[in-house]
Image 1 (cartoon, rainbow, N blue to C red):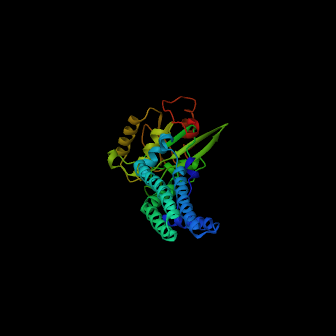
Image 2 (cartoon, rainbow, N blue to C red):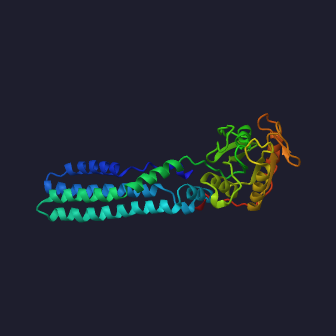
Image 3 (cartoon, rainbow, N blue to C red):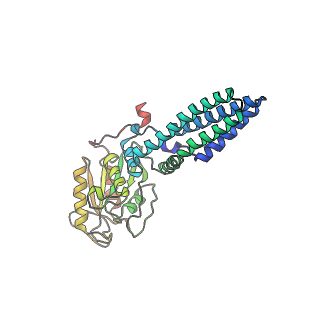
Length: 322
């Protein structure tokens, strides 16, 4: 995944400290004090410029990412906000190089090169400190993006439904994923991915956070992550119902959400009623992730869709677009 290679974004003070140390080494190479001051100014501006440019280049071209990842980034931080921060870093890179060049030239012509050097340090430091909040924000983005799950281009089952209906319990039984399972809602705070080898093929299971039946504008970032997974990576959706009501939500509300989801996708939706050991619902495939009853049968039904082409087309990865 592209985000795994994102480098740490340093703070303004870290950039300046490293740049000043590099410039000091360059300065020592000059025996003439005036030339040494000129070289310091030139070297520190180049070091700052190069470090800022490397920060920009460390981030991916978001427009070239698969739609699922673009939507996740938009949900989490907003693409415009990230581009604004990167633009601020680009502004600082351009102007530190330009101002540094001008002041280095002034240092060569000035009778007091030390005074010019001090003025250069103050101006360059001021420009870098102006974008410190952008640097801190970009490092926060970097830390979160690195934790996003890797979604393969493989047959993908997305598991959806209300919170606490048994989605995480199911994925633990059928895949390599080990999500936290508890008896309270919204245990899953993000997308969890697990895999299972079926013959020579690897099947991908995506455990999504619970979605509530409410207008889209009222859904939080966790719910919108789940919907993005359903819309952009699923080949088949497993929608889990809890007719027992132990999830804390009415069966009618769960059915209403099911109808909404079916209207959103052009892929198969397999519907099962979980917690058959404590409740049941006629007309739906029964399953108990607690005891394991019916899990294998549901899995077989999901895997039967592998040979059936779906209308969903997955966006190409960055490597595929090159």
